Image (cartoon, rainbow, N blue to C red):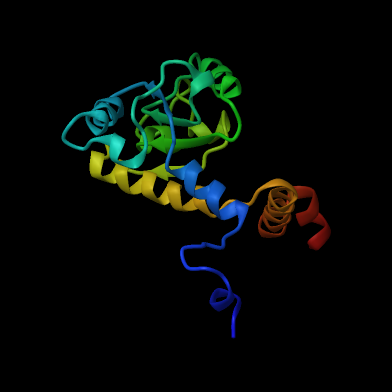
Length: 184
């Protein structure tokens, strides 16, 4: 005889983290940061054919204070990097970043002094979307994967412990040059 049998029908048991994760993933408000040709595909995703509102993304926000997802679409120049960081800092927590296209992810074919070789040098990136430019279907797939990540994020002290564990794993996976010297 389990707990479910003693409760009246229609009662649902779950955790606060599960409910919060579900509602967070279903109400992402993206900030537009279209910088190059990938922005055309991002705009197509917001149009009627692909209809971003099916995934809780009704409107792209012009104000970073109203957004919690930044889609960086295109190449980031060194001149634009401080602006990108400022907009990221103005976004409310929790916030996520999606690097759309090979130029945003790694600098793409622009291997020169003027282009940042990956937006992760400026802001922390949660999801990378390859392609030149990636199709709207690929953006939908990346957003659904980001939804899954958001849905399973922990809250409060559990989140702090999870972040500390990730940092420890990163240190073990890639020791610094000083640590490498000690290992030899």
